[in-house]
Image 1 (tube, rainbow over the protein chains, first blue to last red):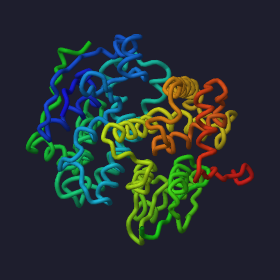
Image 2 (image 1 turned 180 degrees about the horizontal axis):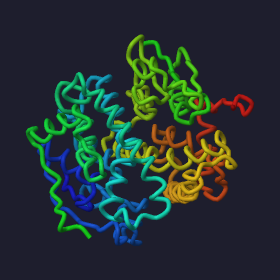
Image 3 (image 1 turned 90 degrees about the vertical axis):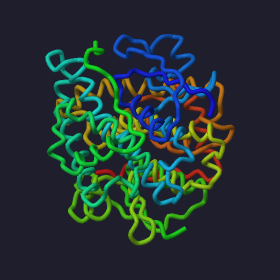
Image 4 (image 1 turned 60 degrees about the vertical axis):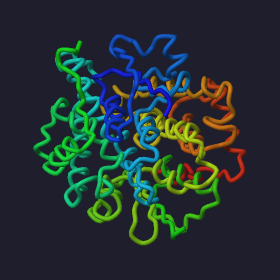
Amino acid sequence: MQRLTLHEDRFSGNAYKVRLTASLIDVKIHESIQYEISKGGTRTPDFLSKINANGRIPVLQVGSDKYLPESNAACYYLATGSRLIPSDPWKHAQVLQWMFFEQSFVEPTIGTLRYWFKRTGEDNFSQEQQVVSSSKRESAETALQVMDAHLATRDFFVDEEMTLADAVLYAYVHLAPEAGLDLARWANVHAWCRRISNHSGFVSMDYRESEET
Amino acid sequence: MQRLTLHEDRFSGNAYKVRLTASLIDVKIHESIQYEISKGGTRTPDFLSKINANGRIPVLQVGSDKYLPESNAACYYLATGSRLIPSDPWKHAQVLQWMFFEQSFVEPTIGTLRYWFKRTGEDNFSQEQQVVSSSKRESAETALQVMDAHLATRDFFVDEEMTLADAVLYAYVHLAPEAGLDLARWANVHAWCRRISNHSGFVSMDYRESEET
């Protein structure tokens, strides 16, 4: 594989997805370039024209001039041909199902709530954040309930072994406590989190509270 | 391919994605089962236990007992092996990039606004809808701007021919006027919409105002 550079913010669960995926399949990310989203680092003219016109990280850079935004697309690219992506068409479809579920029902709920709680702080919430946070919390609880019921009869989301669906879901699900959600309420999800964190190739998120703004 | 049943609401752009994809590659959907989201048809115990625990349509049913929620996963499943999914790994990665972009920045902005305008009606907006609709509008405009700039030098999103990325993006982008956004402001997006609608295998959305609640 060509030289891999990850344009990221270590605080971002989406960036962690890419690091976790790479670690699980023993792929080396050669360089990390850090941005502080809250300080506009991903909205500079240079970033927008060269790295991602949508002004977001993470972006996986492959070689010197190929840039891939969207964390789940980056994870899939890295995991292509690995055991994380089943070759059976129906299992493959279910991996994508849970990856799109993650982008629609986990990242915008748990991920956004966590960002607001940790980076904005509840005392500084705008009117919109005040109004929206309770419905995001309800949606996060619904998503956790759906996942918990699914995991009642399974160790992993799609197959008997871990797939890419588990890796991308884990990134924000394991951060639910930082969004004010106690994972002990969803025992199957809680057990699944422990299962992932004990999996060979696992890497933890590695950001420290002290690094936060 | 096994017998295909689409659990859907004809009003849904997500359901249209699946119909458009099937039409483009000449795959027949044998049966359509209609639900009215606004009347709770997708939240019945039977639907939740059998079809989708997340209570959402569309769901692609394959054969008698396999159910695939998440429209973009269903589209990918149908299009596997077709010309809509490039075999080149980098092009494939970009198709997924735009499919995840669609789920994160198009469906929750244009799609949700359109649903609110058409099904709730601006006069009946809740406090949350009033507060959120203006930021959703801004996010929709940003997404359209990103797409417009991308299409300045290209006929389609990833390749010289249409891919699955174009099909899934078209579903809600072409409905932007129903979300109060005039596509004439984004000339490249506007021209791309015409290009899609003239493409061989294209099928229009086929819902009539008179069918709405």
